[in-house]
Image (cartoon, rainbow, N blue to C red; front, side):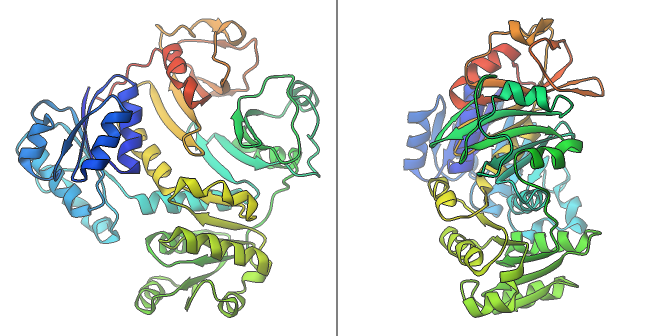
Amino acid sequence: MKVIICGAGQVGWQIARHLSGERNDVTVIDNNAELVRRATDALDVQGVTGFASHPDVLDRAGARDADLIIAATHSDEVNMVTCQVAHSVFQVPRKIARLRSSAYLDAIYSDLYRTDHLPIDVVISPEREVAKAALQRLSAPSTFDVETFLRGRIQLLGIVLEEDCPALNTPLRQLNEIFSSLRAIVAGVRRAGRLFAPEAGDQLFEGDQIYVFSHAEDVPRTLEIFGKPPQKQERVAIIGAGNVGLAVAQALEARADRIRAKLIERDRARAEFAADRLERTIVLNGDGLSAELLDEAAVPTADAVLAVTDDDKTNILAAVRAKQAGAKMAISLINDPTLVPLMGALDIDAYINPRATTVSTILRHIRHGRVRDIYSIGDAEAEVMEAQVLSTSPMSGREIRDIEFPEGALIGAVQKGDRIVKPSSETRIEEGDIVLIFALSKDVPEVERLLQVSIDFF
């Protein structure tokens, strides 16, 4: 598979890492020579320096025989023109573009991306994906991370264990015996900054950050067992009325449970724009770091505060101030992964990484074959893979205890037909089964070998 990735920033780099690791022929284009050099030095990819929308640059990148082009530069217009040139000049069969501006995403303009107009096969909106991620965080407020798999039937929950957790100091094997009917499995544990896949004899301790696969129906019980009783969200404050903040407010208004939301925006024109597009949400114009304005927005009594401005440091400070004021929960939008370790120390309950969210979404759209979904954990420390088992896979026809999994990998759920199975050592993996696998980054290549992954894009 020959793939051209336009934009060598965080999103482009991560996609290139995934696809080149699967032995695809990947070329990266960026007008920043340093970013291109970083990609070619660290990854098994080719690099071209130049503007991705220029036909001669695409030609040098091999567009004449490319199977797929992913336009993920910082400019919507460059991404759109790149797809047009790739289609009109080089007849590239499949084109994906990242578009940020809401003006390009309005449903009434959806015909714009038809083949005979502006040929883009898949449009990815980072802001909309981040808004979805924020709403998922709100749906499980006592978690620091949450993601759904197997069409919403399994949730991955990130939980910090505190001193009142009933499951502390108990071997995981014993937990499975005590709660034998609970369809949940601890797949990963981060302790003292190190993430690992636990074994049956491992215990859980106060301060551990754990990742748990849970059947959607068992999520409330799972949270309770790990010391996080379900919390009702009735009052929410949003700091930042950009595309993300506005999308979250609109989604909250559309929900049936009538959440009372207040939105704070520093820019007066943007605040007025948001107010015109919202019906029940109160929009306040002012600084989200102002103690007086936080009081006016009822942040001290809020069930959750989302800091989703376009500045990481503002989001962190706003989340800290909200928690100090009395908010039960604070969620911060963080673009820079190096700031993530500060979250725990600053008492910020959860964070959203837009780049990781965008990467996962793009990979989900281009993997039409056996790997159906990928979710990146932490700062690319681990991955969750949702994949279908092939007849040629070394896993097929064997019980889990007989499969030679690497130390950092663990099966979290198995779908057999319409039935979801909680895996045990005796579970037999058959051709056609869909498996959810947690794997540390260093063990991903070995897991892919076990799956006999051959990516079918088409």
